[in-house]
Length: 256
Image (tube, rainbow, N blue to C red):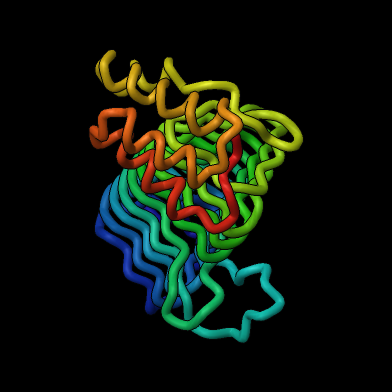
């Protein structure tokens, strides 16, 4: 274990034997940090924050702080972070609002400098947040999504898998999986074809997704009628089925 002499580690924190902690970092009571994780200087890890293996946390990050929620009553809640994440300078990730609940971050995500995940967010795996992007409370981000700089995502919104959100977008509804979204207010601009190819999605599936996208986002049909048409006219392989299920589950409405 390599802990700088100026770091402050609570006696009730649990650190694996090879964890590194840089100068002036603070680790609170009940925090748990697993093997291979490197914590840079001036990092604050609040009480009861759980961090998995092989994470890289750069200077000035603040993880597990109290939620910015006026309904918060000081209950014990958590931030739980998986493995292999890169958390760059001055990232903030806040714990959940309610007792025993958690803000969660999966594996192999890349949070660039000054990004923010608010209370009760659920972020999957292989997600990229670019500088100054912000997730309000209760946002869900599925695997392999990319959220560009200065994007603001409204509370309770969802970002589907392999979606890409262009810089400066204002997102106040759900973003369909596999789509490109940008603008203020945000609108769709087609499928994320490059991302689909990079993830190894085969041409037939990409073609089916394109058909489904056109029906959902480029027809004059209501969402309900468009979804019914997709289920009849487009082969329901897993990617198309996920697109349909995501849209059906939307509570805020979807961006088209």
